[in-house]
Image (tube, rainbow over all chains, first blue to last red; front, side, top):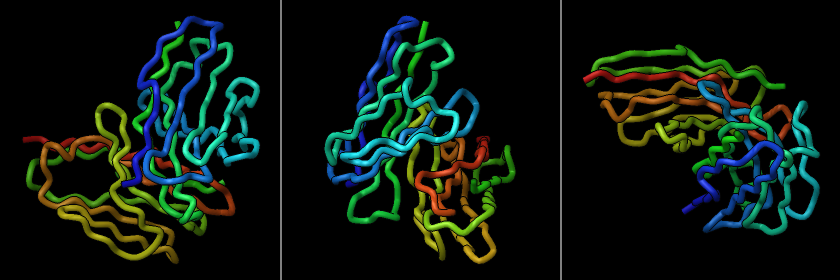
Length: 117
Length: 109
């Protein structure tokens, strides 16, 4: 149980284009989902918290107009990187928390590797 | 925000050895998780342990919340235990996990 999927697993796009990443909780409902970013040889950094039916909360330094987050259902959150540039190349990982345990464990997806050329 | 420090940053051991990884955090937490990141980047949940002690096979973890630290024990190490181990916490009134910088563990045959 507690499986989170992400799609795509990797993507290469040209500078200036937009890319959408999906995060799904497969066997539980998630009121809250999170998006993290990991640069090579570094740790994970929280980008934003996504709550179903409301606007996402972004961490300091994360541009909300560049990283659009939508959490339209209890099992799906999307991250759209708009007008991507090479510095946006990174590993993006989502997590989800079971709505029945609002302060509980987070379950992570397998990640999406984005390369902007 | 909450600070998380992991030690040691790197650890090289022979197969069969035991190891202890430490995680210190700066504030009270309602969530603490240990992860193993595999070579493909996937985070494997090892423990959800905001307090107390848990064991799962060769791995065990202890969190002493009042003293703001957690320990991950790996016994009888195997080469497949190699990788990066992260501690992450959630607390201080904020949502979302704050990760430590990780411990890079190498188990040599």
